[in-house]
Length: 378
Ligand SMILES: C[S@@+](CC[C@H](N)C(=O)[O-])C[C@H]1O[C@@H](n2cnc3c(N)ncnc32)[C@H](O)[C@@H]1O
Image 1 (cartoon, rainbow, N blue to C red):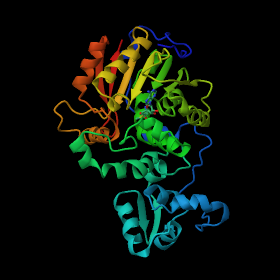
Image 2: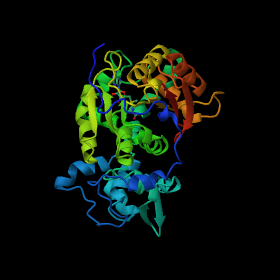
Image 3: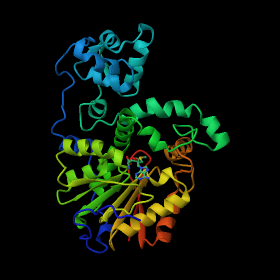
Image 4: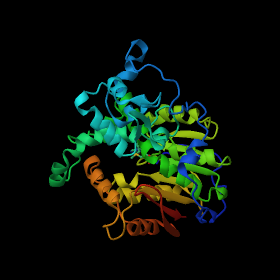
C-alpha cells in the first residue's frame, strides 16, 4: 500500500483516553447559530422585501426557485412575508395547486400562515435557507434529483438485488456521480445536509479534550471535522476522500476560516494507506459496502490509529431485533438501490466486527434521525 501522508500532531492523544464518555448534548440549532460561518447572510423573516420578478441577473436564481420544491419556497419566502398569490407568482405555480401546496407546507411545519401571509417557520428559516451555514436542504435537493426517481424502481431492486441508480448498467457509482461539477457538488452538499446534525452531536458529545487530531474518511466536504474544529480550538485534522472532492472541501472549509487546521488528503481507501490520526471517523461509509469491505475498512482505520485512539462509525444502525428503527431499515433498502453490496446493520454486528478487528472496547451511542454511532477503542 502507498502512504498518502499524515495528519499533523498525530499520536499525541493519551493512551485510552479517547474512550472516556463526555458531557451532555447542547441544542443543535443554538450550536449552529453560534457557529463561525461569518460569510453567511442571516436575514430575518421580514428582511428586505426585494422583487419576486424573474428579470436580468436574477434569471438563473429564479429558475431554481421555480422548481417548486420546499427549499425554493423557503428561498423565495425568506426575503419577506408573502401572500399566497405573490408566492405562486414567484414560484411559477399554477393556481389550481398553489394553495394546497403552500398549506401542505404549513401543515408540515415548513411555513407559517397568518391572515393569508406566509412566512418561514423557525426551523425552515434555520435549515432551509441556502444563504445560511446551517442549510441542510442539500439532502432534499439530492432526494429530489436522484433518490426519488431511483426509488421508483424499488420493485426491480427487490426482484434482482441490483442497484437502480447511476451504475444500474455497470461502472463505478462515484465515477458517474462525480462526472460533472454539478453532480459532484449536489452529492457532496447533499451529504452535508444529511450529516450536519450528526456532526454537531459528535462534536459536542465525544471527549475531544483528550485527542488532538481527527480524520474523516470518505468525509465529503468535511462537515464533521468542521464541527469538531469549530467547537474545539485545539483540534486539527481533515478529510481523506477521492481526489475530485478537494476543491469543494477547500471552499467549504475556507468559508469557516479553518483552512489552517483542516487539510484534504486525496486517495482511495481501498488502495491507499490512511493518514494517521487520534480519531478516525467512518460516517455513512460502512453501510455502502458488503461485509468483506466493511471489515477491510475497519482494519484500515485500526492500523491508522495510535493505541487508545478511537474509530467513530456512524450509520443508520438498526436495532438488534430489526423491528424498531424504521428509518434504518428503509435506509438499508436505500443501500439496495444505491450500491452493489451495501446494507445497514445492527449494533451487535458492528461491535462484533470491531472486536474481530482488534478494538479492545466499543459502545453504541444514539445520534439524530435514526442514526447511531459505534465507538471503537484501539
Ligand atoms: C455516503 S458518502 C458519506 C459522506 C460523509 N462521510 C457523510 O457522512 O456525510 C460516501 C463518501 O465516500 C467517498 N468515497 C467513496 N469511495 C471512496 C474511495 N474508494 N476512497 C475514498 N473515498 C471514497 C465518496 O466520495 C463519498 O463522499
